[in-house]
Amino acid sequence: NLGLRDAWDLAQEVLDAPANTLGTEAMLQGYRSTRKLDREAGIRFTDSLVRLFSNELPLVSAARAASLTALDCLPFARKFVAKRMMFGANG
Image 1 (spheres, rainbow, N blue to C red):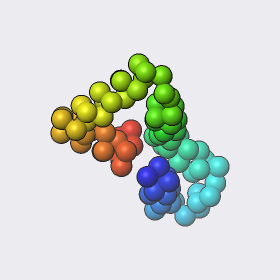
Image 2: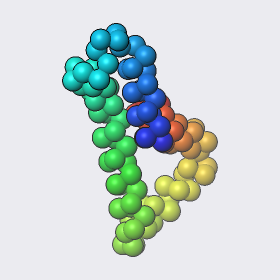
Image 3: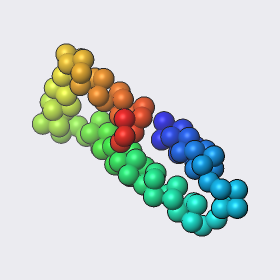
């Protein structure tokens, strides 16, 4: 999903940019700035998931199980997480 959002935002930058600025450092810097928050948040979130689901400490396992149960029981929480996964930090 992160790659799709990257591609979408780059396409929007290209469509919105004057023809003489296509591919310039200034245009690409604008794209990098636009994507920075979502990219960094996505990387942190993914890294956290790997750490959470690969950790077998009893307390972490219990917290993980409780969190997954909460997602099953709370539709608004499930929807929030799903939107974040699909649409990123701005979702």
